[in-house]
Length: 211
Ligand SMILES: Cc1cc2nc3c(=O)[nH]c(=O)nc-3n(C[C@H](O)[C@H](O)[C@H](O)COP(=O)(O)OP(=O)(O)OC[C@H]3O[C@@H](n4cnc5c(N)ncnc54)[C@H](O)[C@@H]3O)c2cc1C
Image (spheres, rainbow, N blue to C red):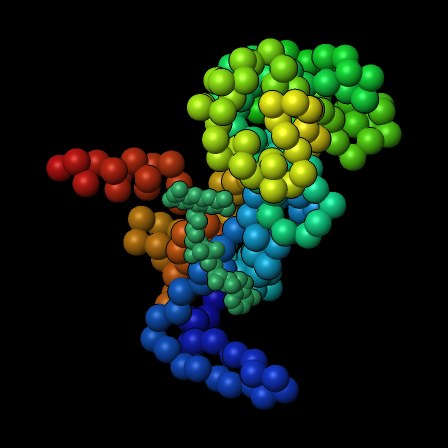
């Protein structure tokens, strides 16, 4: 494998070679690849494609966390997350007939699977979340931000069910890097959401900070 010598940038039709001794890939997460995500649609994990093209080591691309409940919308843009704490306080997940179909407090992946199966069964794009079991005062005092954002979306959570859908939330895989953020290609680094550190590297870094 060769050494990274910089980037080839594009401005309109013009191609510009920018030479650099060290280059960092930092194109953010992958949410834009999903129909529903809590991340911005323009974040499509482009650095992964670049890395793949050049044979740079990738790891655990399937480590993607899906959050079971985000506010359903047909509009483009990132989805608003309806936190687990709402279900913790007693909110219920309902199918198109208003029937419960899953224990709302099961782990994220299990609840997500149940919701997706129910959507398929019902032929719908979402299921419903009802906050009816939670006293109105508690909804308003514990979840003011959720109330506000849902109102902006056209739903009063103290009076009506809201449509929710699972959405991509967090990406744990990506471009492999060591504890110095070096990729497997000399001269090339990767940082933040697009980079995937080994568990041992993360522990080593934490230990260094403690010492
Ligand atoms: C709703 C939400 C809440 C969050 N809350 C927190 C929090 O409270 N605390 C916390 O620590 N983290 C939080 N995060 C996570 C945090 O925002 C990310 O971890 C962080 O922004 C990742 O930084 P990054 O540099 O990898 O990506 P980003 O900050 O997303 O930056 C990536 C940049 O790359 C650019 N880019 C992408 N593709 C290309 C391309 N092909 N060519 C050129 N440029 C490109 C993008 O335009 C963008 O400017 C939250 C994230 C979300 C979605």
